[in-house]
Image 1 (tube, rainbow, N blue to C red):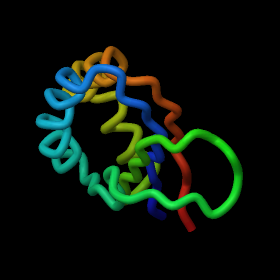
Image 2: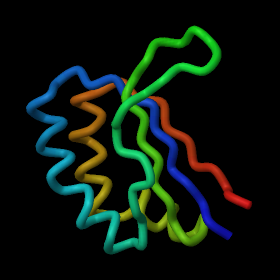
Image 3: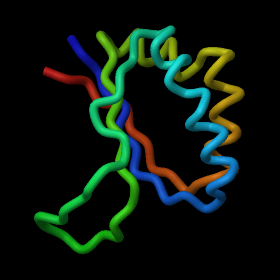
Length: 95
């Protein structure tokens, strides 16, 4: 069953975020992840939360997602993202 990382991100340091974004695709690919949404046009349909950058990444399973999230490769990159943004991130089981 697929699983998804859903991230709601406000970039606070574009230079550091650019460095993070440069390295994430190879790390995702190694763990079977693929971007479904990576920024792009955002249109509010309901609600009044601030518009932020949205990212959705698909994995084949929650186990694969967790292997990526806790991998040594991503642990290093995670520090870059945390330094460069304010983020809310969820792991969601698909159907």
